[in-house]
Length: 254
Image 1 (tube, helix red, strand yellow):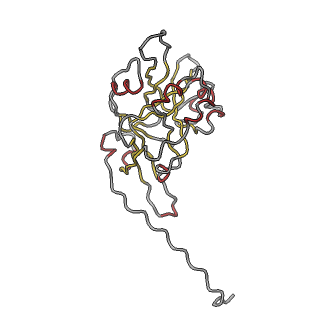
Image 2 (cartoon, one colour):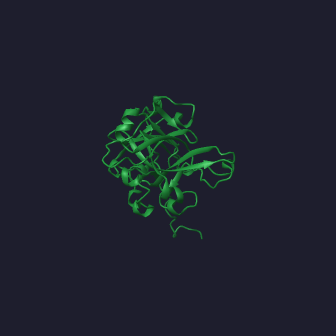
Image 3 (cartoon, rainbow, N blue to C red):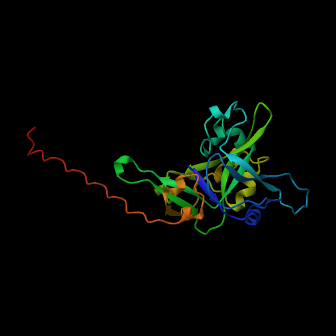
């Protein structure tokens, strides 16, 4: 899954990577949490033939998708993630998969390794970022929810898939990453149906991300500084206890 992420790129960097028509100024954010505003990239109006102007635009939406048919969001679960394997068939996501696919820019994301109580291990937070730096584009979905009084709220969710072998040491899910050469195809909801872009919903290559242990301060939304991404030392995981050898049947009283 993806429960927190970061975006520290400048507006110019964002415009250059995604080919945006225009961008507003925004601050670096080191701890973006569910229900907060996030920047998304979507297809804009088609330019005239021969135009060199970009046709994508950035928009602020609430992180937590609310389908248009929901009557009261207070009675509906917060959908910050959508499983890529089933989104096209789920009532909450199928319309967005067909008509409102988006990109969600990030500098990286946080994940937690939460072992079983029986293992004796402590939970550990990790900062996961592209090994080569820069901006990563998560596959996302968008819906606009309208209230009874006519007000509208734009909302979004991140698509996740099964983890690659590197992330799998921490968690069994990870965000879907869309490569720059696939931006246009993913965002094209006019000619590309969900089945046409299903091949993009795969885990990133094993060496794409680096995984860095960080403090549990990222758990608190109030903590928003760059120090959240400072590496910490992680003690070696305890060795598994050896199994007791079976009793010698010749010495058994039974």
